[in-house]
Image: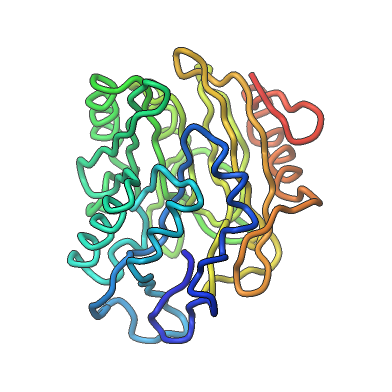
Length: 308
C-alpha cells in the first residue's frame, strides 16, 4: 500500500515514484514477482466503511500507482484482503483495470484466477481471504475445487491467502481456527494443506502483518506470513510490524521447492521499504519455523538461504 488519498495527506511527497527504488533490484531479478495489494487503485468514490478515521482504516491509492508496481517488477497481485472493498465494487473494477493496463495478473473476487506465462510455463494465481466477496479461506471444499480447476490448465499454481490473527502477538501458527476481533480468520494449516493436496505448488500468506514460520508439506513451500513490506502512512510500524521479507523461492519441474532465500526488509520513515542489513525478519522466520514446524520446516543454510 504505497499511499492513500483518504484521508488526505497520506501520499508520499514524490507521489511514490521512489517508494520501491531501494528494493526493486531484489524484486526484478525473479522470473515472477508477487505482491498482496492492500487496498484498491481508484481515482474517485466515497467509502462508507469508517465512522471515525482514528480507529478505522479505508485505503484508496491512485490508479497511476499501478505503474510503480510494474516498474518494480511485479507480475502477480492478490486483491483478496480486508481492504480491497474499502470503496465498493466500482473501485474493485478500477483496480482490476489498472492492473490489466500494466500487465499484472490478479486474483481475488470469487472464482477469479490470474494467469501469466514465464519461461514457457503457464502459472495460475489464486487469491483467498476470509470474505464471501473473495475466494474464501474458510471454505476448504471450494478452495480445493478452484485449485483443481486452475491446475487442469496451468503448469504451476500459486495460492495466496490473507488470513489469521493480526499484530505483534500473532507470530505463531496455531492449530485450528484463528479468531481476531471476534471474526473467524481461518484454519490456516488446514487450508494450506488442503490446497497443496488439491494441486497448489506454492502457498503465500500475508494476513497477520508480522512474519511467521515456513513449512514444507508434500515437498511444497508454505509461507504463513511475510510481514509488512510497503505500507505508507497509515500502518503501525512499531516493533516487528516494521519488518518484512522478500521471500525468494525456486521451484523444480513438479513445483517442488528446490531452494530459496529470505531477503529481509525494514520500513523507514512513514513506510518506505529498504533492505535490512541486520536481517531481523530472516532470524525471526528461522526461529518461528523451528518452533511451529519442528519436523516439517525447510532446512536453513548459512546466511539467508533455505531448502528442502
